[in-house]
Every structure is written in structure tokens, then in C-alpha cells.
Picture 1 (tube, helix red, strand yellow):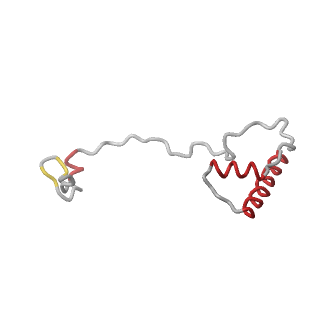
Picture 2 (tube, helix red, strand yellow; picture 1 turned 120 degrees about the vertical axis):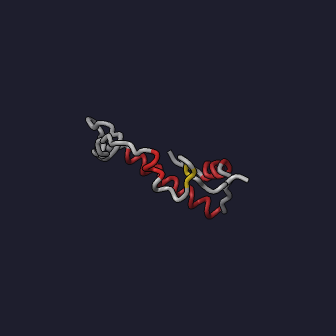
Picture 3 (cartoon, one colour; picture 1 turned 90 degrees about the horizontal axis):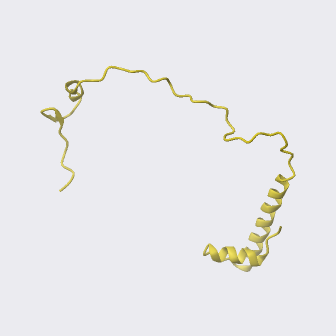
Length: 95
């Protein structure tokens, strides 16, 4: 399969692109080179090769969950720059 300048003009129109005649010839050549490369990939023997979902063999590398004692409201509020009763006090952001 090869791409013609007519094909490139149609694709350019769909993408709302404009090319000069010289650019059109360059694009046609580049697209044909890409298609030629893809056709070469079809020649590779993949018999017996299992499909991959990833090229890495990494498994879950996260740590195990450890249950810790929760902080009380009063302990949390010790770090608050400003508080009112048992709540954080923040600047008004809505007029």
C-alpha cells in the first residue's frame, strides 16, 4: 500500500492543514516510509510469542498496609494555626 499526494491532500483537509506543493511531496514520502516500516514488522516471526500487557515484569511494589491508632480531634487541632472550638478556622474564600 502506498500513499499518493491525493491521499495526503485529503488527510490534510480533514485535519484542517494546508501544505505547499513541496511540503505535500515531503509528507507523501514520509508517510510512505512509515508504511514501508510497518510492512517490515509484518515479516517478523511471532509464532509462539505470548502477547504482553507490559514490557516490565514489575509486580505490586507498594508496602503492606499497617493499621495505626487514629489521632483524636484534640491532637489534630494542636497543629492548627487557628481554631474555633473543635474546628479548623480558615480565611473566608467566598464573598
